[in-house]
Image 1 (tube, rainbow, N blue to C red):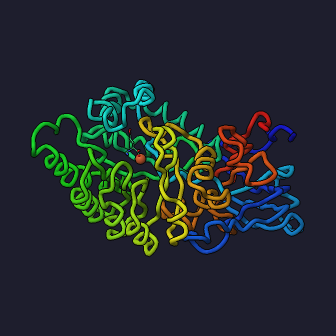
Image 2 (tube, rainbow, N blue to C red):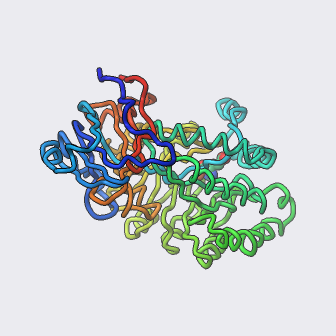
Image 3 (cartoon, helix red, strand yellow):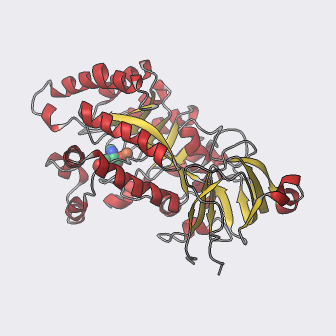
Length: 441
Ligand code: NIG
Ligand code: FE
């Protein structure tokens, strides 16, 4: 239907930023303009400009508007021009929950799950997160880095321009620091932004199990050694805890997150995924940036989120991959007024996907979010969950030129074509970092 993606556009080479780019011919330009995140029903407002165009200068957006307006600007004529030929242009996706660095898949557990074993049963038998911990500790930094680089390229190929990345498969001092240092190196070696989160409290590692005081000794290690070291080396912005049956209790999570806060790490939480623990109430109390999963929330949790600025980040890829029927109550959260975001939760145990468009498809079909709501949840609200909504997640003058172009004429077709990658071009800070070889639909 459409011509090949232009290969003449300036590609990322870690040196040159496209000085001036004029992007025009967008059938729909989804600006997501407005102040801050979109709580409640405001979520569906994409700020669409028909037949839209952008002018980019030095990696930022210099102008945004209808084609005729932008073309009339003095800078437009001299800028390198990319005509989108009627495709849809939107902010690059912000994937606010990933476990980027891990050593290998857990395809062996996938088969066990299909045969009927539950996620928790597999974990109790030494599989699950501990399986990934064993694999990560045995892997070299170089091997972990190569795998993460491949993942980052794929994120970009699906329209994602910023990701959050959690540690949590190391669970000893050296291995956790190794993961967090890799986040930093990866951020320098490729174009996507990586926002680092310390998840030392993922589960209690094997060597601390088997005695009553083991969990407490591990928590002491986190609070007294790891968190201060992570803060000293500036290796993370956020501190996360997996608060659930088989992981950490609400009281333990509180102590760990408070220790993080004292060291300047903002809290976020894995909350109410497999069982309801009260983690959502804790997240709100602590002013957490987000609480994520939420399959098991009750009406009081929903009400608390709705009154707060803590983002409710939904991860439908987990329920899909695990074959679970109970998805998070997205409609109730939105209707109550919560700030809802979507993320992949890319990880080897519960959600091995790198595709935000697939998450959008699940959000529409399983969470009953509209395509517009799903897009806003994956851009401006996710940017807010990472405390970067002033820089990314919407297309306004002065914001970073982080863009995704989809090879469709109507934004609703992005989730509609599930499991098909219609991403046609991804631009990070004004530089083309992905261009499709061929059209998909
Ligand atoms: O977000 N729930 C905890 N952490 C991951 C799963 C990790 C794993 O199974 O490896 C999640 O679903
Ligand atoms: Fe997770």
